[in-house]
Length: 229
Image 1: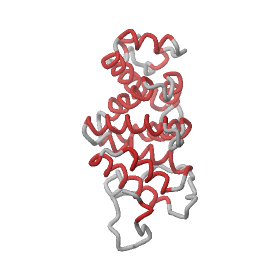
Image 2: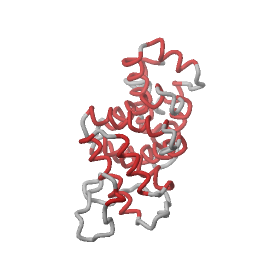
Image 3: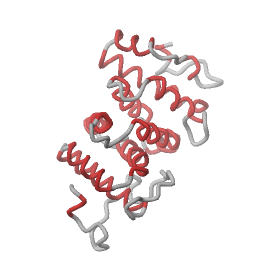
Image 4: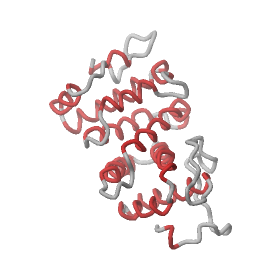
C-alpha cells in the first residue's frame, strides 16, 4: 500500500476505521504533521498500512508507507496505535507486529528510532488501565511484545522496566493497580519460555531492576511476577 500513488485528500475515498472501532484515538503527542495531513488522517493512513501488512506480510511496503506519511513526529503515536490495536488481534498478528517493530528499528534507513519506540510504548502504558476493560489480556499481550524488543536488543530491560514502573495515566498508576507487575511478569515469562532460563538470567544480570519494586502496594504478591522474585 504505497500512499504516494493515491489521492489521499479525496473525500470520497473510504476511510479506515481507527483501532477504537471508529472513534478518534486517545493518543495525542502534539504532532503537527510535516506534510499537512491532519492527525486524524495520519491515524487512518497508518492503520490502513498495518492492516494490509497483516494480510500481505510485506515489511518493505510498510516502511515505504511510513516514509510516505512524512511525519517523524507522528511515529510514536503510530506505534501506540498499532500496539493497542494488536491487543484485540490473534497471537500470530502480535508476533508479526513485534517482529516488524524490531526490523523497522534496525533498518539502515532509520525508519523508526529507539526514541520513537520508547515514546510509543509510553503512550500505550498511559492508556493501559482503560484498555484492559475491553481487552482483559492486554497486559499479558504487551509483555509478549516487550519480550521480543528486549531479546532482540532494541530496547533494554532497564528502559522497559522504567517505562512500566512510571506508566499509567498518571506516573506510577500502573504500579498501584498491579498492571505494572502483570506486564513485567509477562515479559519475563515470555523470555524464559522462548529463550530459556539462562538467557533470562543474563538479561536480568545486565539490568539494575529490582523486581520487588514492582509489587503492587497493599498486596503481598502478583501471581505473574512473583515466581521471578
